[in-house]
Amino acid sequence: MKQIRIGLLGLGQVGTGIYKILTKKQSFLKKKTGCTFKLAKIAVKNPSKKRSVSIPKGLLTAKAQDILSDPTIDLVVELIGGTTVAKQYVLTALRNGKDVVTANKALLAEHGQEIFQAAAKAGRSVYFEASVAGGIPIIKSLREGLISNRISSIFGILNGTCNYILSRMTREELDFKDVLKQAQAKGYAEANPELDINGGDTAHKIAILAALAFGERVRFEDVACEGIKTIDKHDIAFAAEFGYVIKLLAIAKRTASGIECRVQPTLVAEDHILAKVDGANNAVLIRGDEVGEVLLYGPGAGPQPTASAVVSDIVDFSVGRYWGEQNPWLNKQRVKLKPLSLIKSRYYLRFSVIDRPGVLARIAGILGKHNVSVSDVIQSESKTGNVVPLIMITHDADEKSIQTAIKAIRTLKAVHSRPHVFRIEG
Ligand SMILES: NC(=O)c1ccc[n+]([C@@H]2O[C@H](COP(=O)([O-])OP(=O)(O)OC[C@H]3O[C@@H](n4cnc5c(N)ncnc54)[C@H](OP(=O)(O)O)[C@@H]3O)[C@@H](O)[C@H]2O)c1
Image 1 (cartoon, helix red, strand yellow):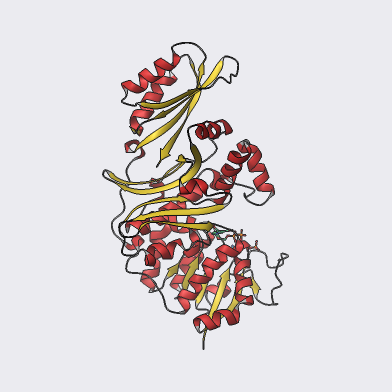
Image 2 (cartoon, rainbow, N blue to C red):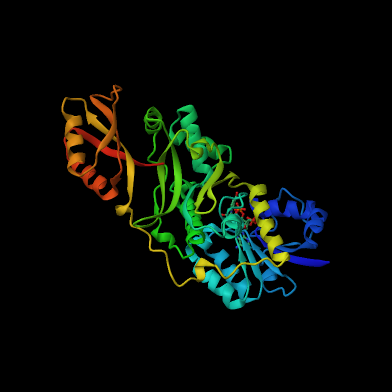
């Protein structure tokens, strides 16, 4: 019977989840894989910290080198996070002839080329199922299940914190700041939620998925990214009046004029399947030329769902399932992403305007002059002083035309504050 000796770097949320699975399910996994899994060493920052699981004496170390340079350890599982120490440890593990499993999307999105080149040089593999959408097997689906498909689009709800906040704002008509505070109190948002709410975490994930879908490297810095802070409960209510729900969507799609890869708050028709993805769940809608549309839905984070994905990588390693030939990070080509200014979309525009005759006509006139035609308008009667909201939905328009028109509209004396601009999909 083959025994896999594992070194765990990190015993936080996910590391503890893995510890639980590997201790509780030894015989279950042995029956399924013909292998046993031995946690040989666990490196943490602070070995004397109180843990929620009881760890045998001697298993914890503060020295990652105890794992990285132990020749009896076959596989290193990196669950520290971030792009500094984690990167250094992953590169050392590869150089020392060990395969690596990681759940670290930031590391792969920002340094994937360096990591995979180091792996290729050392003849090792890097497994990363848990790096996108937690418990949802999205990486294997793209690499294996959908291998015969030319992927034309991926639409993802990939950040549970943002989806939780937007779902509650929608359901309970609450303000962003209040829901964020509650989400932090309940553990759905980090004490420092910036990377989630500014869209960066979602951008890391869509950069990885787009690379796998299109077979070429995607530069994380090229992914256009906007978070959810600019959405307020009035936008959510007005969107609903037009029949839409606002979601933070990650979009990667082939269009006639190039590949788009972006993260933006987006209006989705309320009967669309992604509009129904509620709470902290994730969903990925993939369109392939053979399969049509596939939706993967489930928990996108959390210790046990994420550990479930990490253990699937550990099993892949143990049974010798590896992946290399189609690795986009080893591809000399890089996807040339279409600049945001060239995208075409329908738009939701909310202006705050002085309530007097002729303002609507002037705004519509400026939009028309820039080839933006309006399909729907609501001029709300709710006033703040003498300022009222004016909401317009456009037909398909160029981003550049929209931005130029808005710049001109903002010079009007009757227009107060920066307009809210969101794109509409589907
Ligand atoms: N949490 C999730 O639901 C989730 C979902 C998907 C992917 N991920 C990814 O999984 C990874 C781990 O996330 P997590 O939530 O489990 O993180 P976490 O709870 O913050 O745990 C981090 C662990 O790393 C250890 N650590 C920190 N610096 C270290 C160092 N220099 N040397 C050795 N160990 C060190 C910490 O030690 P101490 O315990 O002593 O502090 C802790 O055990 C991240 O890349 C994250 O993006 C997480």
